[in-house]
Image (cartoon, rainbow, N blue to C red; front, side, top):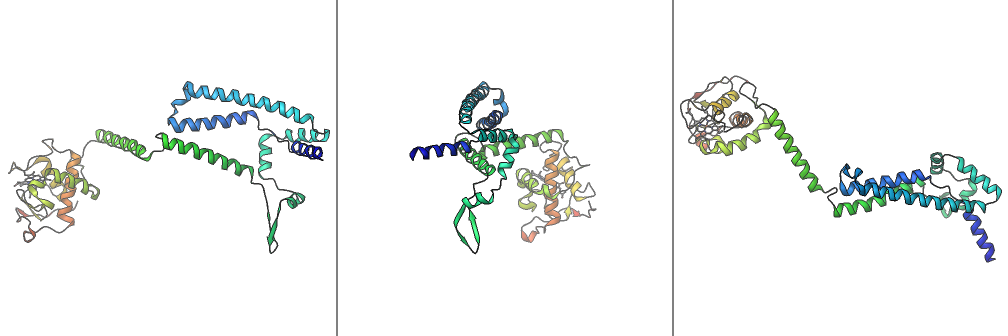
Length: 309
Ligand code: HEC
């Protein structure tokens, strides 16, 4: 009885004698996994030529080949134990190209008799459940996901791989460098081509705080220098307000050396002047003036009648 069961078991295993994965596929998979691992830990392509990478690849290929030869021996051995029909059947299945077989396998449907075997003994309203095997492609993906997750977690914990702070710092540095590059290559705006843009107001406010607030006071309400929020202007060398501001910051005041030529002196660049001019334009045109009642300096000069931009 025992012998019979054992025989039966053997026959069963022989019956499902599996097709073997071609050795080149195994080698490809292993090399891919190794590239993924190396990349996660080294994070650049330089490992491709490193002796460690090439060495481990070579060792793995040798191991795979050894494994494959052992597989050949086992296959031959098992094959001899098959009945002639089974041998024929096995040879037949072996003839189907590997990827075709994989495809067939992935979308295989069981026959009605097979279905009976995997019918689970519960159902409701005629709806039955089959104990289907998970599709191979799904299982493959699942195990790949598990392996990837483990490698990823190790790489994430012990190396710089996918470290958001490191990545941020690198990107930040690159962007600063590219801004500097841009500034170097782009000629600074001049009074001829400078334009007002609301985008420059914030940067202009910074320039104002650093260079102008000591004389023109908070929000441009005036102090040593005139109130910049009202419509009275001492100096009106240009026809439009924006150009007039640019002109004054670039060239300074002809009457009062306190208002120095920030542009000509090299204190501010054309970019700074364009920005600070946007800020002054903004506080002069787009928000309410700061009147003497509100603490602003009394108007100086004459009312201006600016042309549109
Ligand atoms: C040391 C004090 C001082 C600083 C700093 C200063 N200004 Fe002035 N600013 C003045 C004075 C004084 C005048 C008036 C000049 C005159 O009477 O012609 C003036 C005039 C001006 C005018 C023309 C106003 C008008 O009515 O003609 C503008 C625009 C102006 N300043 C913008 C700026 C900006 C922008 C900055 C910063 C980059 C700045 N100023 C920094 C003192 C200063």
